[in-house]
Amino acid sequence: MTVYDVSNVILGGSVRQGVLSSTWPLSCCRCFNCECEPTRRRYGGPFGDHRYCSACFGVIKRKDKATKSDRNRPETWLQLDLSKSMANSYSYWPGRFEIYRNRYIELADLRLAHLREIERKRQGRTPVDSADIDRVRGKIFEYIRPKIRKAILPSNDKLYLDQYSDSEHRRQFYILLTDLEECIQWKFPWWRAMDAVNEQRRSL
Image (cartoon, rainbow, N blue to C red; front, side, top):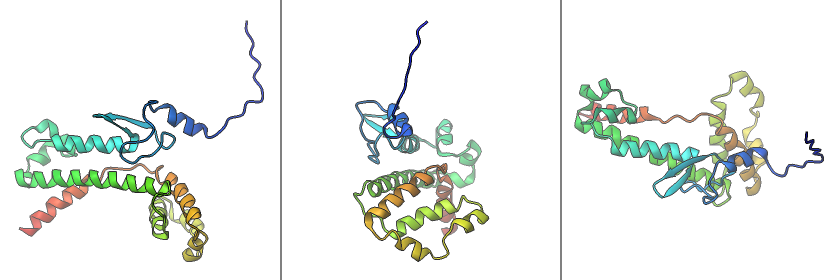
């Protein structure tokens, strides 16, 4: 029997960041889209010759499937969150189907651009202003029960934000908030593509 005596073990850095980094291949040091580092998110996977974090990879796959979808191929409809009955209904004759698909692809592009913007601000390449902080706080508060929200929401928001008047303080606070925001499951807003079709119908 072998007995190992281990003592005075000191962990440097974050265990969570180490776990996230371990999911990335050594050949990839940043996400190809948002340029986040391996310590930020899990590895999503390769797409073509490029490699993405998990957040970007899911959107990239949706965009690719939408680009390849075809109204004449029913098996591709589900890739755009459409059922066969919806795609076959009068609302989706060829012209309107294209409106839906094009808007769907545009929504994917907007999401990818938003992920890039978040990382630029987190890394200090783009300054963080109070509007950025307020937007993320607002998103988080949408998912908090009203009583808890009232308890943690400062009575004077302006005074609260003034505490972060220094650019580096704002950036650090933004990093904290966006870490919390990422705990909220993001859902692809396919219903906005549906809204585009409905707007086109109303305009006729």
